[in-house]
Image (tube, rainbow, N blue to C red):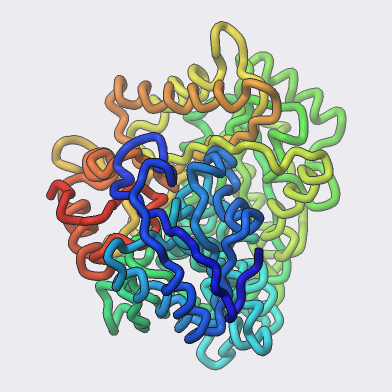
Amino acid sequence: MTMGRATATMVTLVVPPTLAASPPPTASSTSSVVIDDIIRGLADTTAGRIRTDADATSRASTDFGTNVTVDAARPAAVFYPSCAADIAALLRASSASVSPFPVSARGCGHSTRGQATAPGGVVVDMPSLGRHATNSSARLAVSVDGRYIDAGGEQLWVDVRHAALAHGLTPRSWTDYLHLTVGGTLSNAGISGQAFRHGPQISNVLELDVVTGTGEMMTCSKSKEADLFDAVLGGLGQFGIITRARIPLVPAPARARWVRLLYTGAADLTGDQERLIDERGALAGLMDYVEGSVLTDLQGLIGSWRSQPPSSSFYSEADAARIAALAKEAGGVLYRLDGAVYYGGASDTTATDVDKGVEVMLRELRYARGLAFVQDVSYVQFLDRVSAGERRLRDEGLWDVPHPWLSLFLPRSRILDFAAGVFHGVLRRRDGAAVKGGGPVLVYPMNRGKWDGATSAVLPTVGDGQEEEEVFYTVGILRSAVADGDLRRMEEQNAEVARFCEAAGIPCTQYLPYYATPEEWAARHFGPGRWDRFLRRKRKYDPMAILSRGQRIFSHPLGRLVQ
């Protein structure tokens, strides 16, 4: 049933006493309180809607990973706010409750392990903010003179791109997939092949509007409420719900020269990547985008959907045959570098500059000779390449399947050890046979100096002294379980990757992290110093542990947690 302002239905809100245990809590295992009065109050004092019907709560209990069962993650209600004040009213109502109920913000539902769910609580449907806006510019406002865009937390990055390009401007830092919300990526980090130069998206924010866990509406920046600003960026939704972000803009290019190179070994690939992201040296500044892939699935759409040109292939049939032969010679594993340089439009870089730079790069890099491919596409086409792949997967019925993704940050000094043990080991075997199913496996470096250490994001360290290497790598094992048994096998492989890293002494940090208990989060993700800061901020901005309990970092009351 759909509930509006005249709601009078009795609703039972389930409040998990702790999310420290696994499996996820369910309604039958928890105490409950009646929230009919809360719903009545919200209906009377806000323009937001609340739904408790099975259709709404079911949709709010699943995500892109489709690894969480509906019954385990089902909220008591879904809230459709008309403005940030509605969200503040909801959070104040939870704070005032004898048993504060969980509240989670949901954008596109692109998490993979139920992180945006609120079992027994309330899920906030963030896109509702945009639907209630009187006009689109109210939630996407470009300041040409100020060189920034004010974007609602519910807005998609693809719409940010469209609004900014209408004025010849663009953000500097992107995610690869643009159909994600601004608030969602800023709550994690927001990374792609541009991050080596401009940092992640959380390093490219001027100001935020946030509703804290206590229901306080606050504007924050580096110069105003800086602790909240830093806490929320990369904060996994633990300190507040982002309702607006001010993103800096720069003059937009018109074209992208897309370069693709094939390698037979990880050492040559990573060595070339590091030369391209180095701010000094002969290749400094040649590329605006640097990414890499591990090719263990050379055939089929499922293995290449993130990286195909919008209307054609990089390879002719003859090229594909040569690549397949090289892969066989290399033992079944190849590596690929994807790079791009932007030019034209409002950019200072010309086509002649690009031609000269690509010539230097192709001469200097150590790829397999004869396997360099170059295409020229529009800037928009390059940014939208993953969405184009999504459309192809949807057409084949391969999009709405389980996605047991594993994303890691690794120190530069151990990337080759990881490659030998995982790319050439774990991912190539399972009881003597290759695992079915597949998907992109990404590997590329970033510069630590482009990340703001004051934010909540966690990067890898090395040794007991917690040394910080300037260059670190991200590895994304982004697979789709399309056949019977794929999901189980892939999750077993993910666990095997973790065991390998532990046995080999390879320090790694999860990106889009998932742990089952606060103790695991404290010991395995944050470490002592960062955990202390994270816990301090939680006590300050969400002392009742209302927000994002689906992450399983905190439970109510916070006093139970180890220091």
